[in-house]
Image (cartoon, rainbow, N blue to C red):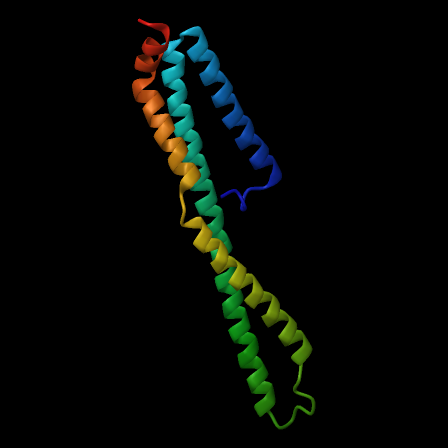
Length: 148
């Protein structure tokens, strides 16, 4: 889920999640129904931030890999031209070509594996559902806990 976020983005996200959880528990224990309900919108916001940020950064990574595929194709094409040119005595930049293609291919395979994992929206769904329920039924929950 958070593979595309850097360390500070993760710290901020986990701090926001901790703030939401602690403030929700305190508002329930003190019986502040409006604060508890408003924190539901905050949880919903966390879900959207995780979903949108992760998807955007994954899309940018995919663009990078797509450009790498084009680069590989150009390199192979240029290499083929060198092989066909009779004036070039040593047409083999093979080690460089092999290394670049291997790196890019491994990166592409890793990207495809990440894409499969990304299709699960677990955390985003949990925060969206919890946030929506808390936002909509927060006062009712406080009424049940406080008996009024």
